[in-house]
Image 1 (cartoon, rainbow, N blue to C red):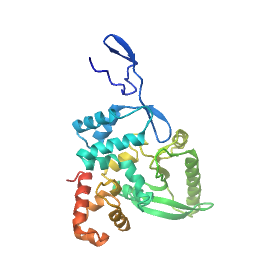
Image 2: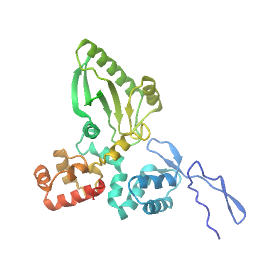
Image 3: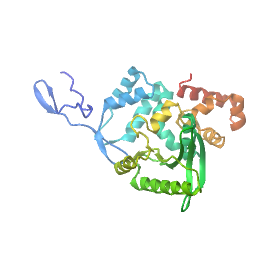
Image 4: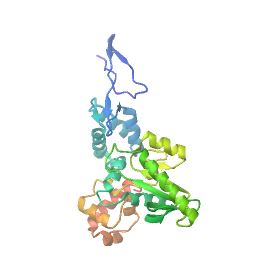
Length: 305
């Protein structure tokens, strides 16, 4: 008997029916449940592409996609799918699993003792800005605590950071309205000489924006950066382009080492690769044997080994 065609097709190409020995059989789509509660069709091709994006070969990506496809069921939470993907990747290439879990690793930085403002500061430094975290600036009416001030030759930017340590939480239009009102007060303050003349104010989050927030920002020409917003130039893309993978993604990172790394302000895998063993030992107090294991994995995650 010929095999039944897969029911888990991408939503754009899924057939309404399939045929088996001349009989018509309805194919029911499989839906996944996102952290926000929304449902969307399971797309095995999307899964395969995301594995390749993390550095998996076409063969490994297809292998992972096939293994996960066998285990999905209607209504499966995206978190469960992520766990299945990571389990499959870890069997073959643990360092690719670390890259794949970038979003989760960013969320785990908070509990590990790092501030999202630190992440943004180091990220923007990689893009040529000089940054200052947590500044108090006097506007026309009130003082403002600016999460990150970023400066390069062309612009001076004030940044409002909205960090969430759980998926499915949106940064909404109220946040966009709040940031715009603060920017107006800062611009008026600059005219009165109470603060620097900021060229713009950004709203940055590690999750998603609501549709109203995006509409408002586009109307006001206000820059917002979310996990995948703007498309192809969001926070995920910016981090991946500079190979900034948090140490919280590493599979060999134990809780005690993570605590010591946090105390030494070593936030990204790149920080471990760029420093020598002697300096890392002095900063963290971690044994040379353990540091070699951590540094080797960090180099593989960054694609430097």
